[in-house]
Length: 251
Image (cartoon, rainbow, N blue to C red; front, side):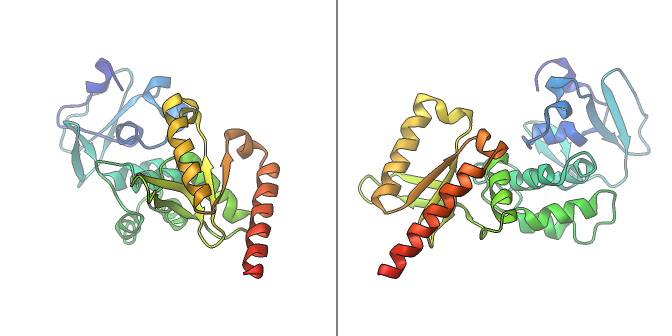
């Protein structure tokens, strides 16, 4: 978020709702983002004077928990998740909880257990949806597409895969993470988003694939097309599982 609108808020107010979610880099649908025209949201206490302006939504709330994010005072992530709950589909809300526990998150990281504990005794709109999302959320998930892939696998009847399993090259010492792993079968599932087609990411992916193949893993790569029609992916996964099970029997 850039430009003058970022600073528009009521005096003493906290940035909240989808605006706080965007500052926390939660994976929001486009229409809920500032760049696609969503208004700036803030919250104030009931004693504060409510000011309004074009493109600004003010919420009046008591006992607001907050934190400082890049020099901006925003509502606590749990409050943000509760605000998002009525606006998002279930899987989108799962992806937001996943994002707070991401391996790559550097600030304001909340584990799934922390979110679960925080909403245990809460009585607020959206808490039932948030609790349902927390049941399917996992730590160390680095992208909403990884969330989608994991949920798709489980709902198809496959065991739940391990998220971002570390693997280290014994020769170079280079450390990699497998997006989704079935360690028993030595099957690695990697989601390739747009950034995977850059030269730098291709180089990293090549190094990871080379290591995994050396260590006896099968590597299956998914794209957004596989999410739209996963039949070929599931066929390849079934074949990889059969091959792994056959190898186990021979051993």
